[in-house]
Image 1: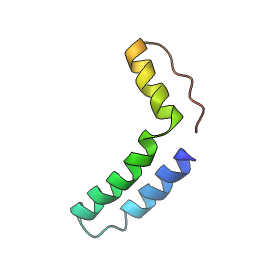
Image 2: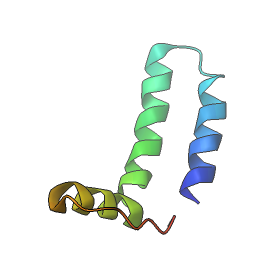
Image 3: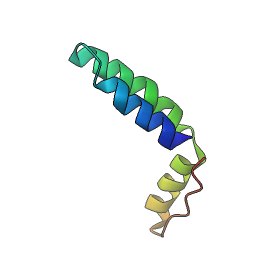
Image 4: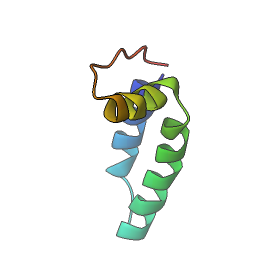
Length: 57
C-alpha cells in the first residue's frame, strides 16, 4: 500500500506546475506514510539500534 502511494506520488510530482505545488504534494504524502506500522518500526529500529522487520502496511 505504501509503495503504491509513493509510486503514484512520484508520477504526480512530474506533473506539478511549481515548487510550491510539489511541496504541497510532498506534505500530503508524508503525513499518511508517517502513520504506518512500518514508520513506527523504522523509528524503533533507530532508537533500539537493531535490524528492522518491515511488514509493508
